[in-house]
Length: 201
Image 1 (cartoon, helix red, strand yellow):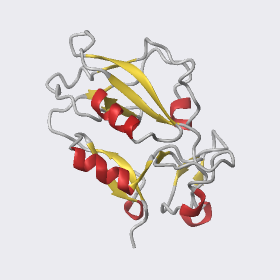
Image 2 (cartoon, one colour):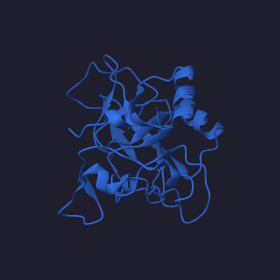
Image 3 (tube, helix red, strand yellow):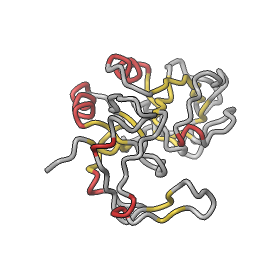
């Protein structure tokens, strides 16, 4: 039986852009922890295309990046807005090309906020971080309890279609019907992984 959620994964497209780490943003770690940032996000946030890959110039709708964030095209961002996703911010970023110039296309970090406590920690075989007692470094298996997902955020019933699990910020969950709609719309640079297929690497 398939679960109602899949894992967001970046699809490698030949000669597609790879971004280096996000620049000019303080407390970048908050973007992985789901801390709201829309109120203070800088207009100078930018990604540099990886200079070691000068021929990787194809702009996908979901750009590969070293911060493990969702960096989406204008069209992709508008698609998400049409779905009226709960607890998601859209943070504009500048993309700098290999010649040091900003590209004309608009891109945004799709930032799910307020992670959901949906992991079955015991069944996951979680290995907790020695540096951050609130974070999991690795899991043996990925096991979730779907009954917690729509009611876990601050005791308010919400419809979470895109979110990170609390304690384990390396992944993003997507409601299956949203993933199917993304595929049908033909967005590039994104694919899905079944939860039971997840392996730490």
